[in-house]
Image (cartoon, rainbow, N blue to C red; front, side, top):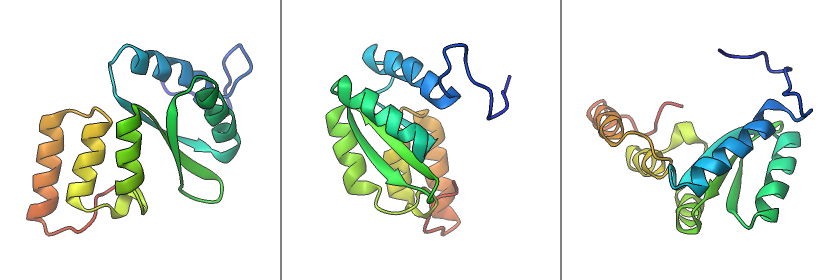
Length: 128
């Protein structure tokens, strides 16, 4: 069930920062090679500090003045994100969108269907 944005877990951390532990667990177990979190800039500072303390590669992409996307995980995947994601996610080409979705561990068949739908409709960028 969704919780209101102002809800915090019992440890006092904001919900996004609290979820970082779960994402790091999945990453460490090989469930996903890379994770993306959209965070407030305040939460991003805490998350990136924790990632650096654990020697986990990450990349921060500005979304708005108040929000960022933090990509983290396998060094090669993060390097790929740095080279591919150079504009807002909703402006990625179908190919860039496919690469990012695959790196994030999204279902491959759904990514293929998304790519085909984007290319067949002549869209030059992905829907967010």
